[in-house]
Structure formats: C-alpha cells, structure tokens
Length: 492
Image (cartoon, rainbow, N blue to C red; front, side):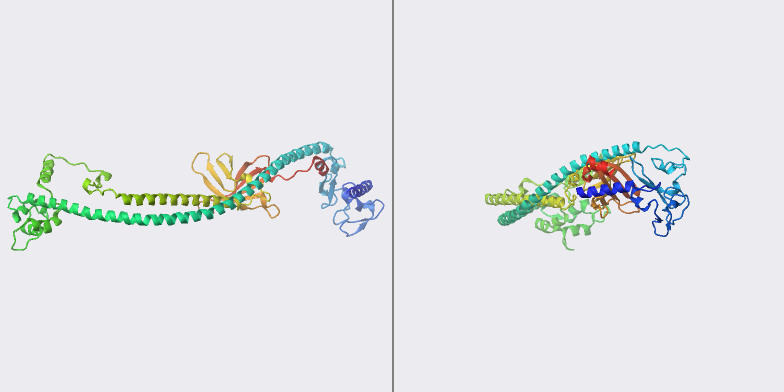
C-alpha cells in the first residue's frame, strides 16, 4: 500500500512539472509536451506544438484549443485550486462570464473575475462535514436498530417454534375435551328428552281439560233456556255467527256451525264439545265479553292503536303449564355435561389464541426488514405529515392514509406491498399498493422514498400522477457508514 502511494505521488509530481497549456487538466498534461509534435486526441492529425491555443481550431475534436473559444466542441479545464475542478465548454472561454471560481476562463482580461475558490471550498467542506456528522449519527442509530432487529427476529423465531409445539399439545387436549363433552352430552340429552316428553304429554292433558271446561262453559252460555241442548234459535241469537255479515244469522249459518243435518234442530253437550267447539273456539265471545264491547261502543270509546311492540302477542304461561324442574338424576347429568362443555370451550379458546399468536409471528417474520433487520424499527409505528389540506400517515409495513384537515374519515392510499427501489438499491423505496379505488380510476398507491436522517420522520407528500402518491421519509436505517474526516478532506 505504501509503495502504491509513493508511486502515485511520484507520477503526480512528474505530471505537475510538465508545463501545461491553459485549460488543460493534470490528467491530460501528458498529451501536451512542449517542443514535441501534438497529435489530436482523437488521432485524426498531428500539429506543431505552437498551434496549441493559437485561437484557430485545427483538430476536429477541439483538443488543440483547450484554452480558447475557437473550437465550440472543445473543453476548458478550470483548476479551481481549493475548490472542485471543473470542465466547461471552450465556447464559454472569454465570453465575459466568470464560469471558473479561479477566473481562469476569462484570462483575456475582458472582465475581472474574483478568485473565490477558497471561500467556496471552505463552505463545501463545512457542508460536507455536516452531512458526514449526520451520517455518523444516523449510522450509529442504524447499528442499534440492526442489533435490536436481529435480536427481535431471533426471539420471535424461538417463540414461533415453541408455540407450534404448544399448538400440537393443545389440539390433543381440545380433541380429548370434545370427546368427553360428546360423551357427557349423550346421557344428558336422553334424560332431558325423556323428562320433556313426559311433561309434553302431561301438558296436553292439562290443556285438554281446560279446553273442555271452556267448551262446557260456552255450551251453558249458549243454552239460554237451560234445557241441556243448544238449538238453532239460540245460535241465531249470537251475531258472531253471521258469516256473510248481512246483519242476521240465518238457519243455514246456524246449521253449519252446529254441524246439523237437515232434519236436526239441536245438539247436546257431547256433540257440541266434539264437533262444534273446535270450529268456534277462536272467535267465540261470552255474553259478558259482548256486553263489555257494546258498552264501550255506546260511550264512544275508541281504543288507542297499540304500538307495534305492544301489538305483538305476549304469551303467558299459567303456573300449572310451566314445566317442572328436572329430576335430581337429570340435574346431575346436566352438571357433568356443563363441566365437560366448559372444559372444551376453554381448551378451544386456548388453541385459537395460540393460533392467532402464530399467525402474528408468521406475519412479522415474513416481512423483509432489510439485509440486517435495520428497518424493523418502523414496524408497528406510524408517522404523520401535514400540508395545507391533508394529514398524511405512514404506518411501517402496514398502510398509508390521507385525512382532510377539515374532518372526515381516512382514505387508505395503499397497503404494504414490497420494496421497490432500483436493482442496485432495492431498499430506497417502499411501495404501498391496492389502496381505495379512485373514482373512475385505478386503486391508489404510494411510493415512499427513503433517505438518511437522524430521526424517523415523514417529511413530504405529493401526488405526481392521479391517484399515485409519493412520500418522503427520513430514517437512520438509510444511513451508510460515513467517511472519516481525513478521507473526506482527501476526497474534496
């Protein structure tokens, strides 16, 4: 390495001693040797050395006039000692404009140029030093991110492996609890069905007895002459049997309701209960009910229309129609089944919780956080930027949104998709895609352009194309290792 540096220094020193025509850089000095014939750099012709910078363009490539404007396509080299060297078109030499900070492009004296290369160089070095310091601070943070990210990935990978083992165990427990539940529910179901069937039969007897009482009561109410039979005249006295609503109950209507033949005129109680009551029980009203309704109509009472909820029938169950408690044996079977069901529910819940944790870990581990996990710090964090109209938000590896400052709901501009930087710098751009659809247009999307910074910060948002957004984001994760101060000054 030392030999190489010495060799470089020797060569550089030798080149520096070669007298250079105006406008020629050190690297090109070997082409211009005083006293020797000059050959155009493109090899097209050879010229006497005195033709160099004689203000006449002899070479097609303009290489014979590096210090004049004679060749429009030629190049003039500004040494700019103390600042950055610069190559300008030869046509700009002597044009009255100071292009070189050392003023060498205006050597003819048409204008006086101030040499401010040292001032510019100083400012450039100061700015470069600030950039270097920013890179240094950012890179230090990046190293911390990398360490934390790698540890997090290792921990989550271990957690995933353990949870996958736990899942297998929980599946076994869940299956065992399900089998026990099914085994406990079978005798429970049989005992409950037996009890309910017995009660159903008993309830039918109770209702049948009650219905018989109602039928007998209706018979006695209709038997006005108390001769233990209901005849046509007694039916005709009840307007509720007026089927055609013509204001009277005719013989035909009375016969139909009493289920009478052409020659019969009355029915006894047995016939009434068996044949008549099943057909009239739904609309039959006792004399007391008819009197109450008639009284209300005479007084001009108009019942208020019931509300929809109140209009619905609310079934009431009489005490004697309520199913009695299960017997002790059935209760014991139910208690055993309840325990089995609770155990199964708990086992199933634990399995589902574990499966959810596994999915979350797999999602995390499936994301590319950079070559050394440096971008993992963005996961689970959101960053906002507000301009005159909107507040934009980017949630790392999740989604990007937009919300109007005047209020309203968020619009999803895109969901995390992939890294989308160029082939040589994949991690320069994040792509959020498949956002909400634009009206009569494509789904929204966002490209997040990342650059080095000492904080994770969203610094800008724009819409270069319709429904295609661009965010600017600063992060230490994009900071590369800075050059040392010595390297920086050497480069400058």
